[in-house]
Length: 272
Ligand SMILES: NC(=O)c1ccc[n+]([C@@H]2O[C@H](COP(=O)([O-])OP(=O)(O)OC[C@H]3O[C@@H](n4cnc5c(N)ncnc54)[C@H](O)[C@@H]3O)[C@@H](O)[C@H]2O)c1
Image 1 (cartoon, rainbow, N blue to C red):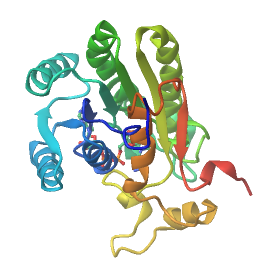
Image 2 (cartoon, rainbow, N blue to C red):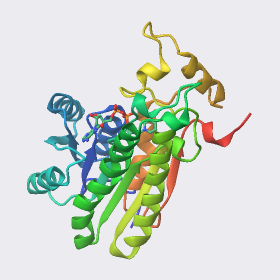
Image 3 (cartoon, protein in one colour):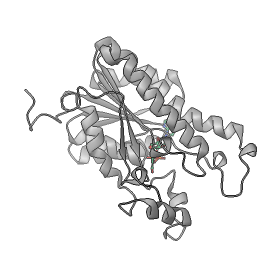
């Protein structure tokens, strides 16, 4: 029976957070561990991964670091096998590797027809192929075989609204939302739920230079974003905890699949 004491209990779960080495992935790894999941932080930087693992253990959670490149299916399969032999069957996958590249943006006055194709492809590769496709194949294969799993893709509010400048990133995240819906339908009767979380603006490593000046004051773009956000602030990565734990928990969200949960302080709910 589901009760208020167990609805979000993840103690029988093993969660993999790809990009758990970063700002948002790290906060979601913390949240899953604090609800009892054994967490594998997966990424390319051993140093940052081990730091996150130490923080989770310090807080009383269970975690381990596993190195892998989200753009390399072989390394993901190797990581999956190592995690499963150490922690047990993976039941939760959070795809949080992703980000933008300066060359794939269109600053004011720049020419869309001159946009770099290689940068465009890199952004699509990182966010769509590494940020969802390959990890979903590597980990989803085992989830489908065992008929149990929750895959959570980190898309973006930019995937719902074509934000100015970040054209390749917005288009890639729109594709992540579409792939989320496709896979949700594909695996709906196979015990695997597939959902997305679309954050608005949260200061992190990959966007700090966009949001702040070197002296720590808000950049012009940062001010413009806050001016358009009804809550008049950026998000704190901890504010993704509720969405990720809810989608991860089979008890709490067993009939939820193919959805995109937006956590953006109201940004996408308003226009001027
Ligand atoms: N920060 C925001 O405002 C925001 C908003 C919407 C969506 N997002 C998305 O959230 C996710 C996390 O972003 P973040 O803001 O925490 O950025 P971040 O740069 O702090 O974290 C991303 C992490 O992914 C890792 N990574 C990148 N390429 C990888 C690869 N090939 N293999 C393994 N790991 C790889 C990075 O090393 C980094 O640790 C991304 O998908 C991003 O697009 C962020």
